[in-house]
Image (cartoon, rainbow, N blue to C red; front, top):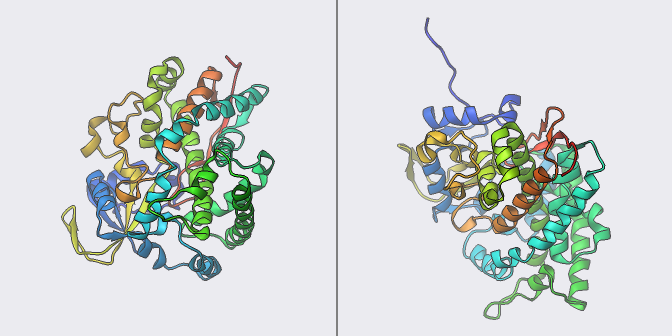
Length: 407
């Protein structure tokens, strides 16, 4: 009997794909590595192709964003974007080079390293509170809380403002996706207005009363007489809340769920602190919080033997590249928290747009996950998770867990 299979297709709204996209990625890598998606873009899925596109200096992120068509109900949001100074995510050189150079002078791995004690204190305080509970939703009650508290603390903003800023930030996070519902558009527009007003006031306050915190350093950063404008500063601060927060939530949620599905790896993390330096990278590789990153090609090229014309919109499938056996070998689909080359994943992108907050996300993910599973050695799933319906960001919306007796 003939085995008739349909061609593989990338459909991020397919319920089965939402739960587990990796079988689809495997077929795409094998059968259609330069895939024409239903929305008209190309999707490259092999590690070498993804890595090459991300590092190609003859591509554009700005033109990818500005020329992507949107439904009519999203036009007000598109208009607001057009009137604002773009975030660094949507800038090409030389504007990207200039702004990144300024921000890197304050947002360094060494500076993030100084936040370890503060992050550990934030995590331990929250764990003390959770110890009184038998079951929790790990996303809403743990993963969602930590990165916001950390970035708020780093910027030196009042703790009393955390809840309301978190709500605005959550609404704005939806704008990282190409398609939103009318309700999400309205919430994002309202959140943007309130976030801008809040951050404008915060900057003015820090100018009057500077302190040893990230916000003051961003205000004061200067290189060869150049500084960020007020609009650039507000855009950068908003990005720290929006992109930095959601991706770290997903790292903590995805990573903890992965360990719960692999008891041998969970036991290794729980019992051996020597894995700490590597665990976040392997969890990022295994189930990337950011699944795709877009570019517009500025030149004709050939990808995996396929001729691709200039001006094509290309999505790089980061999640697929991180499981490509042609790069990772026969253990590509195996979770291994002591994997020696785990840091070569592309979950933070690559090239000039490599994530500025990579060191912060790694640090938060490592501390949040390792201290959680060690604090609750009887940790177990208490039900099935739900998944967010996203094209770019992959995460659990809920993850019910039973804590057991604390250590």
